[in-house]
Image (cartoon, rainbow, N blue to C red; front, side, top):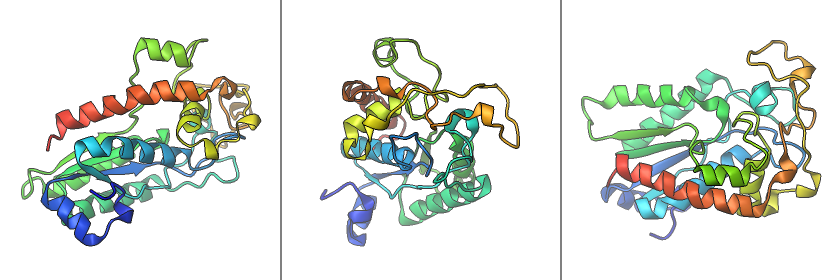
Length: 256
């Protein structure tokens, strides 16, 4: 087809896609600080790029992203302490995603993928999918919804060792650090100010939350680990494994 970007299609082209049982991918992200060197749109850009990368082989189209996510938390994104981070309530996110799924089903889509990147959106979007599925399971049992809350969690040991030669700190701490910076350097270098990248961390990183948020658990730059160790090559290696992994899973669970 002419393009896999739903927003650039005409309504008759979307109708044609539905009639041949094409699927649809909804990228879900956030508007959240990503350190001194990355833009606020990282969590929306990356799932959108991933959606486009897998759409052709799966005969899917990629819907406009949900660009706002649930509120940032200190130990996985810096928390609601940075100018620019613009978040919505959990209920607002759930209602938005559920409404969009309802509309996809109204259009006639039967293969729906929620492709999330923002850590804090997890569980909320599952609830949206669950509620949407419950409403139509008796009348449209052929509609399938896949929820990928964190599609980047599974990499080979070889790839993990290459990206994180000094050890892996965990995906939460990795916010705006090696992995995301490397992917952006590979996919959207025009959006990266790599000369401003810093290695940083909070003075304390507890396993629990505190409100109001104390300064000691927030990294001052917004980068929670070692962004300077990122590279375009690391992004290329990660992407070359991530795309086929996601493609394989969708093809397995939502075959055309």
